Length: 427
Image (cartoon, rainbow, N blue to C red; front, side, top):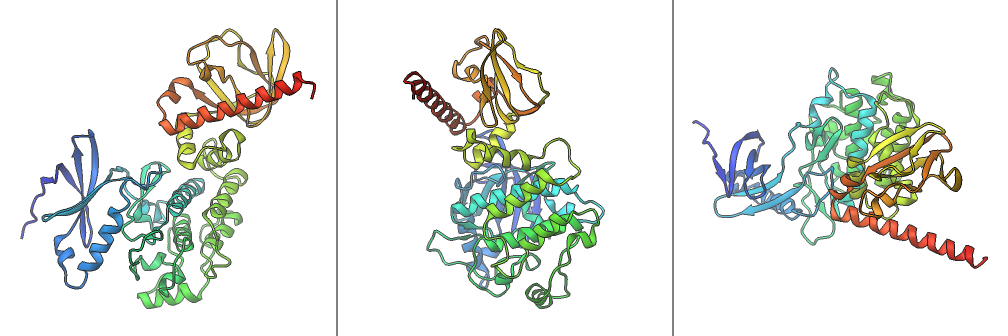
């Protein structure tokens, strides 16, 4: 029997089919009102009405639908809308065009080790965000991680999620066996560590092109997960550093007291590898940049979502000692934050101040709201690294991101005024 053609779902014009699952189909559609392409997951009516699985499907649909508008993070697929009427039940989501991570789990198509660190770090930060609003994914696997561009990823498919801040009954037995934690196989109570375990398996697979455990049936697989130690990634891929072996082994530890307790611990170790271990990479990894932002005093009021946004519109520049960063009289079209090193502020060759890591450079370009001429020279006192932000680019940032910059500069101005008053008072 020929498959029926779907031309429209609700108010959305269907452009084509993206894929089929056992209980749903995903379509590419046009959202005319918002002028964007979207992905629509249409749940099979047969599955919803099935005598055995209908109740489960209904619960999974409600779980994913309840997250619409809540998981707003640059590395999580946004859920725009959810509809259940007499004809259809469907979820409207952000469309990500690059496919899934699944294609990078083949031995002949592995990512560079630095790229694996990037991907896993971004997943860890995204899942930490989900955890903070009470969501445990429970089905982390390469097929549920979409690739937007290179290492720019988005976690998707929260239909299996356990929402810890709700009274809704948790559905047991959910997950993909090869990625399920020991406690998941035993149907024990779950916390964020079950997602940490699954992401450890994904990391192992991206590094080696194989799963840590394989068996002919689910019972055999569960036995290995509950009793055996996985091989180290370096035993399969010789260029994997020992530091990465340690991270994967800890993420996949059977004993939850040994496994990472928090996403912060997991992400922190990944960032340390990105910063300290020689890996094939181009420039500075996003992982290293993001973790650096989180340590700078300037960004202490910024949340993760805003920091990822800053990374998108900023430029990281390395400046040699004695190189001029800002020249007096030039138009002020950018400002910067020093990441490492020091800079001298000079007027008519007279030293006004010495700026260090975490301090801002040329901020009047932002505070004045116009292209005011620079009032002083800024020269690198040492080799330094700086985050450079164009004033026009910041104008197009989100409102909450701009608000954080405003609050930070207000705090800096108050601190400077207090310091000046103390100096005048002779304290």
